[in-house]
Every structure is written in C-alpha cells, then in structure tokens.
Length: 197
Image 1 (tube, rainbow, N blue to C red):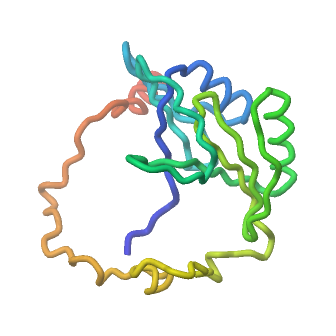
Image 2 (cartoon, rainbow, N blue to C red):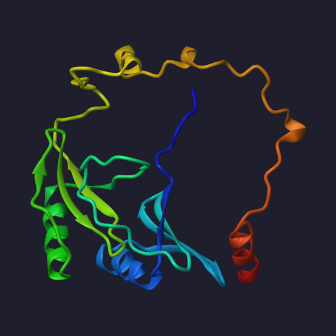
C-alpha cells in the first residue's frame, strides 16, 4: 500500500493575488512560504501546518466564482464544493468567527456534526471554506461509521482499501526510465542555497 503523508496542497485560482494574500496570510494568519511568477502567471503557497499548504494561481481575466452555499446540491459539470481546514479546538473556531466578522466577511454559526464542530465562510474569491475542530472522543480513524442507508456498491466492502478491486501492476517503471523533469520552480531552493554561499 502507498503511504500518504497528508494533503500536501490544494491548488486554487484567483484573479487578485494581493487581496488573496491579505486574506490568507494577514487575516487567517497563514505564512506565505513560496512565491513564483512571471508576466501573466503567479503561484503562491500558504502554510496551513507543517507540510500542508494551500496554493493559488493568479491568471489574467479570472473572476471570483459565483457564491454557492456549502454542500448545496448543484447540477451539470462541477468538481469542487469547499475546503475544510482543521483547527485545534472550539476556542480557535470562536477566534476565527470574531476575526472574520470584524473584517466584514460573512460567517456562519458554529455547527455540531457529531465528529466535528464547523464554522463556514468564504474567501474574497467566493471559495467556500469550512473551519473544523474535532469533537473529543470522536475518532473516525479508530471507529469508522458507515451510516449511508443506501450505500454505493463499493462502500459495502467497508472502510479498508480493496487493492484487488483494481488490476495489479505487472510491469513497474524500470530504474533507468525513472526521470524527473524540470518544472516551474524546479531550481527555486537550489538558487537560494547558492545565494547563501
């Protein structure tokens, strides 16, 4: 089985990187860790926690998405509803509620979902955000809850992965073909190391 370390980053889009920086760094308190850009393109990464980031591309002509209530069903092509950011406890939810209201952003009441308490809002791009704090004693990882009354067929197998449900790898990539190709920012940290010398 592949060992995942968490969600490294979620990449979103903005038409106003300056306002996005002011919201995510200055209002929500996330450090701005990486900035890359050239004419017509920017990508900035904000630190959620150690090894977990949220990134934004800035492209010319991008407009804020229409505001859509968190979890409200839609029809037609669609792939994204909201992002959910964990916080340490309920007190952090109350701090966020106060900060967002003081900055004149809409923010919900705190909602009890049984395993998390949630607070909902939107960033300046109308990206729906949920902030959630785990309910003490509710640990889905230790005690999964399967409560769908009409589960899809694959969910009937339970919470654990079913590797046999997919074809096995018959020919792994040979060592001499394992190449990593240069991308945007590929030499970012080697340049920084060279500048320090």
